Length: 376
Image 1 (cartoon, rainbow, N blue to C red):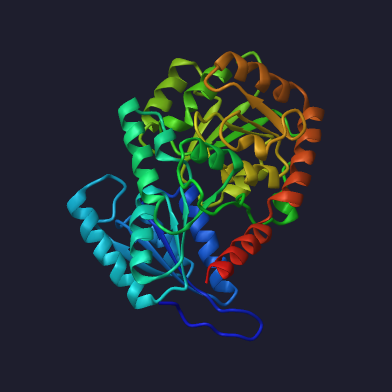
Image 2 (cartoon, helix red, strand yellow; image 1 turned 30 degrees about the vertical axis):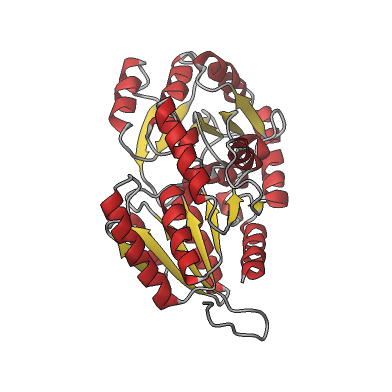
């Protein structure tokens, strides 16, 4: 079964996106939102199928996107709910008649590919960080890897957001022999008024990340706690279950007068434009869009050397890559940015150039559109 095709300037696709979580608005959900909105603006028909009833649905509807919410579709493995979600998902796809099903994150990838196969529709799967690579028990990681290998036997193209993510999947023997494509994330450019200035003092460090264990705000805070003899401010953008712990740590380290907790914000581009340094101390990442947004804003980036971050940040040229979890290493690297505005200016300018060359939104969208057209 395939969707309607309209010839003329090009093929008009019917693309169904499937993603599980709506309770948080993170990198994967923003990726889906931007792709869906851009494809629709180019004249394609789009449906976004999501799980739950969270705030991400509001974001999708605000973008005038067609949304189908499946309340039982959740990240956790619950066989009875998963079976009902599969049936509901299949009904939504059958009614929409997509030409391509684009699935994102593990649960949506599993059920979405199953439903697409049952309807004879080509599918893609983007993990946005393999579940078996997350910090958990050895048995849990082995179980998740086994499930990924099982579902990878379904027809479909694996689309990773970084070469590192693809390599991790290949080492785990997921989708061996299957078609694989790496398409780096991209973000749309901003007006000149949202480009940061390196010379403002005292330097403002900003981090945009959800407060949960993999983001490891504690390392960044402990590093800055070692630099109280220097003048700086820190803004933390995001919310999540570890927010209270971060607030307590700020108090313990004597950083109360230096740190602002801004919560979840819709004006991230404007906030970045007022900063002088972008920091991301995560313990695990695929290819974070926030790093690209910082480079777009002409900010030097200091980030953990993890996942695909090094595919965006060139160490010593556009930013600094730091050992995971080492407050001492982070303090040493941060110190250079805090005291040397010329270094901030040079690396920020290089990062802006690299963003323009490699990580624009239209470049990513063209690659995704080309892939979907090949699959029809």
